[in-house]
Every structure is written in structure tokens, then in C-alpha cells.
Length: 367
Ligand SMILES: [Zn+2]
Image (cartoon, rainbow, N blue to C red; front, side, top):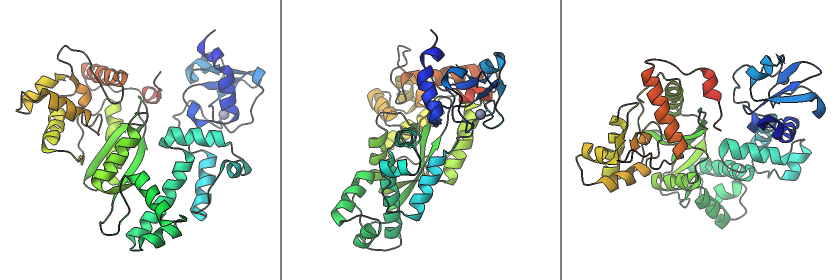
């Protein structure tokens, strides 16, 4: 039994729920119409016994099916924002203090589990945490406008000041206080062929870029907010737009070095170590000992390794190019398989000269 057949029941359920987290994992072909669709197609659903699942458009087309004109499965999936996200955000925009419980989500015609999965996948947080973040953002904006903490807390739907303080500390890692001006970190999700990344920027530069499935993501973000005395909000920032462009060029094989300001808090030694990482040429590797020598501190191999582990701007500050002196891959925050992928990708691109990676490659999901 192949993988498609094994997963057919799960896929059919995803199809009924128009679950966007299955985009790119399969296309569905309908025997009675001869048409194939994305998992999220809005067209009427065919009966289970009339559908077949294929891993991608090519195999469905090779089996004689035509692409659907509604969901256009052969085109690049624009990160589709699902209907429930539009409806729920509009609702929260109009009624920021409303708590959208599972029951309310159901009464609006959506499946709470789908909402939950999508938020987890897209923002690595629960929908409840997302709502708390919106309330927190509202409070933050009030504090910025000079309102006192009590007024801001109550106006943002917190019933008590201590409750607000606790939520604020929980979200950002430090207490709300009017004495210190708060800074803002803008965050955004970026797609890559090896999984989605979370990118953050302050006005001075990029301060965070890590794979969203990283185990320590949440504690790292909190740590960063605390160090920068900043709150984190999802949104747009010129540095993030530049990063998105440059990262796409990198993954197309058209960019070898990044030209972006980096603003990660760290000691002098750490900053020097991160700069040394950026000196390792594209498509090559260095050992920790090489990097320590390049830093002018040949004895500081261990400290160099520690600095690399604390690198928060993956790919742009290419710690994936540092390997053990025995040639082993050693560790990587985003997982060793990603390190291996990046090294092979750079070597292959280098060997091909200015070759580019096809767009289909950009959308492939890791195993
Ligand atoms: Zn369709």
C-alpha cells in the first residue's frame, strides 16, 4: 500500500475541512469529473469513493486529470488566508475585548480544531494566545499614547491590574512600566523550501530569524523581548521586506551574501564571532578552530561554539557552514537535516554557476 492510499482517510477529512496545513502534501482528483484540486478548493466536495489522491499536480495530470479552474492547483499557492481568519480578525477588530471561545467559533460556522491547527502552524501559537496578543497590543498602544497602566489594562479587557501585569510579563518577559520607553519588535512569517521561518526586526536591523518548528522558539522570543525591552507584534517592516526578498533570492540560487543590518544583542566576543561566520564563503565550510583563528583567538574554540549556538539569525549569519574538526556536521538549531540541506544546496548551486532552483523546488515541503 503506498503512502497516498495509507493517508487517504486523513486527506479526505482535510479536504472536507479545507485545511490549509495540507497544501502541498496532496492534490485530489475526482473520477466523475476528471478534475483535480488543491486540498483547500472551495468547489463542492465529491464523495469519498469518487476521489483519488496524488502527491502533486504532475502525477495527477499524468493520470489524465485536468486542473480545476477554481483553485488552480498547478499554480503557486499564494499563502492563502482562510475564510475563518478573515472573519475572526474582523470580529476581533470590531470587538477587541470579545473572547472568541470554541462555541462562538462553531456558531460562526467554523471548526475550532481547524482554527487551532492553522494558528499553531502559521504563528506557532494557539488561537487563545493570538487573542491575548491582540489585547496586549491594544494595551501596548495605549501605554505608548501615554495612558497610565491601570487605564490601559482595564480598557484592554483586563479585569485587574495584576492580571494585566502577569499577562504582559508572560508575553514579553518584563513588567509593563511607563518609566521606560518600550521598543517594538515587528515579526513576520517567511516561507522557505525547508519550512517556514519566523523573522523579527527592530529599527536597527534584523534581530531574529529561526525555523518556526524550533523547540526553543517561544523562550528565545521572550528572552529577546526582555533583552531589548521590547514588545513583539506581527506586522510589516522595511528590514523584513528586504529580508524576504533576499531570502527568496538565496533559495533561488541567485544570492550568496546578505546585505542587511543585524541587530542581535550580544557580547563583543559574540558579535565578532557572528561577523566571522559571515566571512565564511558561500558553499564552503570551516571548523570551529578555523573560526576561532579567524577571530584572532585560536584558544577560544569552545567560546566560539557557544557564540554560534546563540546565533539568532539563521542562514543570514551562516552558522550552518561551521562543522566539527572531524568533518561531522555537529549540531544545528534548526535540525541537522536542514544544515545538511543548506550545505548541499550551496555546493550544488556553486557547481552550477549561476544556476537557479526551479520554483517547484521552492514549494516542496520537507519529508
Ligand atoms: Zn478546485
